[in-house]
Picture 1 (cartoon, rainbow, N blue to C red):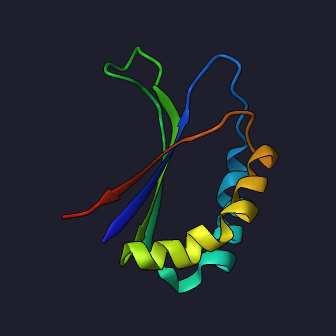
Picture 2 (picture 1 turned 60 degrees about the vertical axis):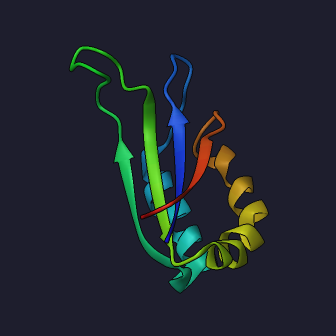
Length: 102
């Protein structure tokens, strides 16, 4: 299985529209990627290494795919449409990692 992790770094000048991200961007992903997503989750950071530290990432999202081929055929084929939507909810660029789940 393959996990796509998308991390939005926290900063003083960060803007992020949670409602848009969850509802509109989430719907866009469902429409474009459909059944190729095995599971997904969104994590909104509330603290760093201690409750008094800011979270290093405001949002971390994970999308799970059956295989790299499934990822490439769905996300890879639609990446331009997905990336074009980013300015609608944030002013930052995410850090992205593709991982193998064992």
